[in-house]
Image (cartoon, rainbow, N blue to C red; front, side, top):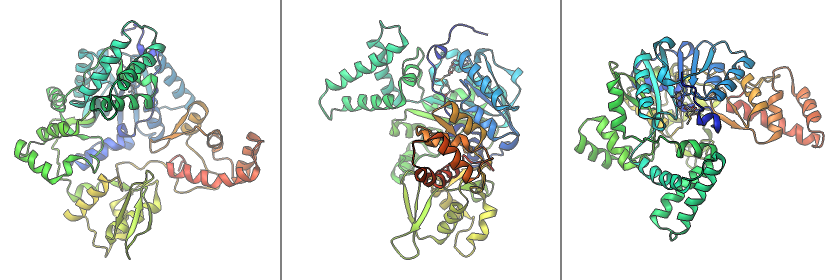
Length: 495
Ligand SMILES: C[S@@+](CC[C@H](N)C(=O)[O-])C[C@H]1O[C@@H](n2cnc3c(N)ncnc32)[C@H](O)[C@@H]1O
């Protein structure tokens, strides 16, 4: 094992849950593409470069029947993660300090492999080993998630990176490097006229870095290794290790050029039916900067036509809230981020209302089917096209696993033990849907800690009064039901 001090020991990397890496997401994308992934409820998951396990540990908590293994070169974050696993009493999670260069068959085979934020930020030998490990350790129906900096957008990121590194070439102190580098970029921006293309490009990078914070900028933008790749290079690398392109972890958003008919025609003219060539050409249109690519074994048959029977094997969920539409019979569905869709399709309305009634739980198509009778929505080709459109707009979510969330708010609500533990130790809590909930408000944070399943509403109010004696009792009381509703909808309350 390599024991040299790791930069991630010197400057801690903020570690979060990443829903796109969850085996549920990987399995759902695999099913959508016609594969038969191993059920999420009883699978083996490997996270390469798991840092302190902020992604892996909540997964292990929520899926007790599966086994989760993670490792990372940086010793200190791993020790923090090991301590958390002990405190939470998890028997299905194991993380250790180790170098990917030394990892291999002794770890066993895995149904899901996750490598988030590694491939494009490490030396060539590590990159090579990452793909080799996916090739060696992925089971026959396995799915691997690898995120990386993509080209051509990576060229833009490299431009700012090079300037930043030049600006701090004489500065060793990690605490100084980021502010000085960002200051240098501000200087470049201010020297250019308003509206100038060069200024806009750098400004956009600056905004992103300032939002993500100095620790992320220190590692993601200023590491020694920075190796963005074209999609075709990544796929070729995977092919050398017996793997093939499955899909991205997330469907392209509705604004993506891939849905425009004139673009599709032009791609077909240029690349025929070669989906990989088409994807690469699309990346040039998108100025793609980042990818979260899923790969599977080369022998699997991947279907990209999304037939109806694939949806039958998936679970559906929706967090859209319905309201009457402008015209008679129409409904407006609004997602938490504000995206709205108006529909007068009786089938779409019945489907979304059925899902709205059970959120945050998911339903199988069989469970929804009785509600769709006589609405004109059947799981045929047309029905599959509609479901796909709803999935692209995020009006419905596709799942392969039922998260262990509460059906409603019970008399003595219980938040997940991991959420309560995070409320004690972090600025965010991970939901059972693997989302991240900010806990900046001290009242919300304290309230979450109290939801251990032993307190009814009266006991909750008493505990809050003791914790916040300066606050008006009515105010505390008024907040209880809405807060419980928020925790329930976020998937924080346990079944
Ligand atoms: C940008 S961080 C990403 C961490 C985590 N996966 C995430 O997305 O939050 C990169 C991680 O890769 C780890 N790393 C770098 N080289 C490694 C190697 N050769 N073997 C194992 N881990 C490595 C670092 O210690 C660091 O924790």
